[in-house]
Length: 307
Image 1 (cartoon, rainbow, N blue to C red):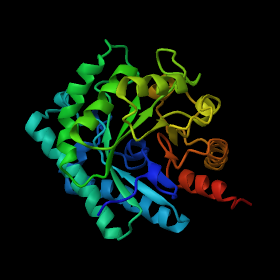
Image 2: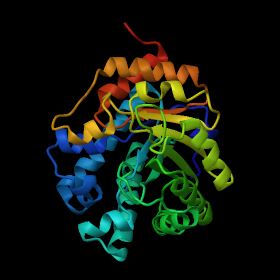
Image 3: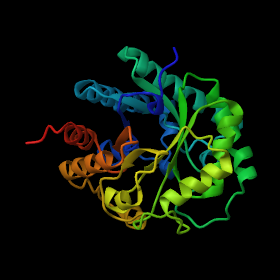
């Protein structure tokens, strides 16, 4: 079945990338390097991963919106998986398995407005100082993971938390090379700019120029609305926002020992305001520190169903 992707659909879609903090703080699980894909190899933790997405589908059904199930593969690339003991063959297997699990969850729901997206992460910690990949280097690097996921049941790929323009462009080109639609989701600092100081919408334009406008669309994730609300400028290529619950900077969140849940209702209002002032946005949801309460408040605020 060929499903309509968000940029071709008149539906709004919920996305939930806050699974990592949920697993750590609410389920008490250890995620070495913040990698959740090793949990696929244990029946109990595998069930928890599936359960998170079943809950997302249930909420989407109750609120009459579509939803996107992201595979737990954000860390499942060569550089970030190697320290965890994953060589090429084992890593390819876990990427396939992650896609299979999400497809099983989707099939059990029996709905056409559920998409499975291959979650792609940057080659290294997006907040660490490191040498920057060229576009060609990134294109070759990300082809390995994307070519494996292209042969699974995923409908698309979403590259989350990218903040280096050349790596983003190379990743988009790699997806084009293997024939997989890709969404590029950028992360900004508290000033609404990428780590190198490039304003968000300028970065989108530059990445588009370097990748032949091959991304399906762009998003922003892993930041609080107060960090990026003033930076979106109703850009027509920016179609999604997946927000953190906390107003803290990335450096502050890295040092946090307790989960900052923020204010779910206030977050819902802020996301609704952003969506209403940026009409191209059709995908919204929660990243670090969020749970179904936050997502429900977003949908309620967008529908005007507030007390």
